Amino acid sequence: MGISSFTRKAVGEVFKEIAEGIERVNFGKKIKVGLTTLGSEHGIRELVKGGELAQQDPDIEVILIGPRIQNTPLETVETGECEEDLHKKMEELLQNNTIDACVTMHYNFPLGVSTVGKVVTPGRGKEMFIATTTGTSSTDRIEAMVKNALYGIAVARASGIQQPTIGVLNVDGARRVEKILKQLAQNGYEITFGESIRHDGGCVMRGNDLLSGTPDVMVTDSLTGNILIKVFSAFTTGGNYESLGYGYGPGVGKGFNKIINIISRASGAPVIAKAIRFAADMVKGELLKLKEYEINNAEKAGLSRLLQDIEKEEVEKKDVTPPPAKPVTQEISGIDIMELDRAVRVLWKNGIFAKTGMGCTGPVILTAPEDYERAKELLKDYIA
Image (tube, rainbow, N blue to C red):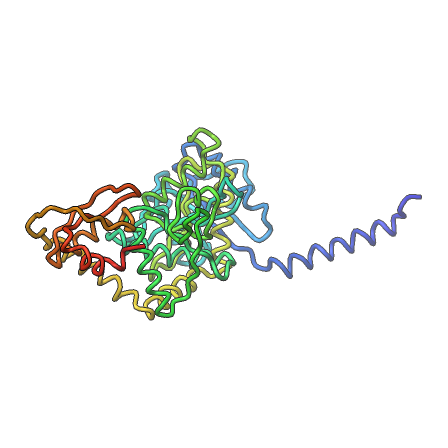
C-alpha cells in the first residue's frame, strides 16, 4: 500500500526540520575561504573545480580572487591579471575579515614563517603533518627545525590532535634538534615523542617512518619537506599532477596573524579542495591562538637560551683548530654519523687530536691510546 499524500507531506516536513536543525547545530556561520585563481599549471578551471568541490562541505564558503570566471556558483572578487594584484587583494580581504583564510600559490611569507603540510602516507593510509614545507623559520638550520617542531605541534592541535607525537627526520642536524626538544621537555614544555618503527626505535625517524606515517608530525627542514610533499602528492600520477593530500599547509610563525595555506602550481582539484578544508579547519581550531600559546610555553621552558647556545657553538666552531697530529688507533663507536664532525671539534677544543673513520660496525672517532679514556668522557653525551 502506498504512502498517502498527507504522510508524504508530514515526512517531508520532518526531514526539512531535521536538516535545518543539523545546519543550525553543527555548522552555524560558514567559514569563508578565499582562493586565488592565477598561477596553476593546469589552468583556472582546475582551481575553480577545486573550489567547487570544497564548497560541497556545508560549513565552507569559497570566494574566488582573480579575474571574473563564467559558469561557476562561487562568488568572485575581481582583481587585475597578475599574481601581485591577487595577493594584495587577498591580504586586504583577510585584514578586513571579508574572508577568514585563503589558499594561494607562491606567496612570500616573512622570515620566521614557514608552512606545515599534511599528507596521506602510502604505507598505512595515515595522515601525517610535515613541518615544514615552504618558507624559512630561521636562517640557522637547527633553530629552524626546532621552531618547525613547535609549528607542527600547533597545527596538529588545531586539527584536533591533543597530544600529537613528534618525530625528527634523520637529516643533517637531527640529533641536535632532538637534544634541544628533549631539553625543552625536561624544562616543562609539553611534547610527546614518537617511536620509530625500526628496531632501534627512538624519535629520530627513517624513510620507513615516512611511508608508514609513524609520528603525527614529522619535523624536517623546509627544503626537504618541500620535496617530500611533492612526492607524496604526485607519486601516483607521474609528477605533473598533485592528486593526494592537503597541500603545503598554513604559514606559521610568531606574530604572523593570517591563515594562508599554500598549494603548488601542479596541485590538482582534489588537493585544492582539501587545502581549502585544511584552511577552514585551522580557522575552527584557532591556529593563530594555539601557535602563540606553543611558542610562549617553549619560551618559558628556555627556548631562547637554548637557541642562543647554538649561535655560540657556531662562533666557537670557526675558532677551533686541530691540535698537532699524532697516530690514532683507538676507536670510539656509537656516535651518530650526523654528529661525528661536531664530536671531533669537541675533542680538538679540549686539546685532543682526533679523526673520523669507519669501523666494522659503522662510523667511529679515532684517538691516540693515551687520549682514549678522556675522549670517551668528553663525548659521553654523543655516545648512544
